[in-house]
Length: 380
Image 1 (cartoon, one colour):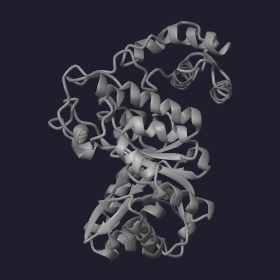
Image 2 (image 1 turned 90 degrees about the vertical axis):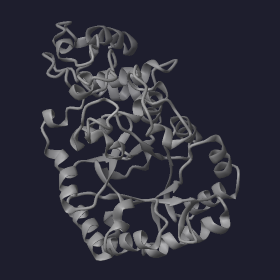
Image 3 (image 1 turned 135 degrees about the vertical axis):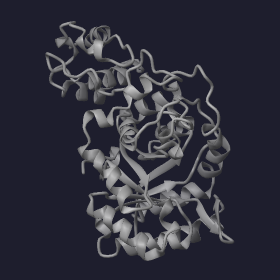
């Protein structure tokens, strides 16, 4: 298992994480064993948005004796009322639900205290301009939540969270289909019909990833498989099927992303997800699937897929393109981006213009021209 730093939290999280919402579908002992098995495979981050007692009890039992080996995303505002999940900012429900989370998880702290599910301006106002956010800060100041995060499906709200300065990481929905979809405050819209002619990543989403990378706000990924729709050509908006490894690789190549959280029913599904770490480049290759799809295209856009390798002068073209995309959006090149670019060693100025990379690019990116512009922008 490989591990990545989760932005400014400094936590080293597994690239493949655990989305816990399916735990309650199985007998408790079976789910406890499944989570422990995932831990043995190197998975160390789990999301617990679920307010139901069974899911929380399972996670608590599974972490018993090894609490320090898990990073928990625990949500504030996810409550259980009359046997049902209710998203709420009402403190008479929020406080008991969070205290229940601590109790059932058998812990006195949550690593990542998540402001739960902010998708609209109305959601934002209810969370940020009330006693709710004061409670979040109080928990953080007292060490009950170690870091403050926020979950959303809307890139506009995600960018607002990043700009607060106190939100250290984002739980965000990322997959090739969602990335083509314009921002919306209604999650159901993103699972609906996709219009023919949509092409490439939506600019709001691309700018969110760049902003997270620039501000060192880590991203953990939910809904990476588009609810399984991407695995079937008939339900995929692209008209062709992806594999789990390809979806995982797509998410992990977005700027700012540290981990993708996958839901599991069986140990075999854990093994399949973790096998990403030993998969070949061909097995991870999402770019060829998108480029050859009968619907939609990322023509002319670099997706950081790595098809451009190898470079005869050893330029890491995908990373150079990523830093160019990060820098060109700013009036001046951010020092953090500049330092990462310089750390590559071999920079864009080394490009000899052979254009071998362009012949391998599935999306027709004019790489040589981008190398020239990058060398001018960074001065090397």
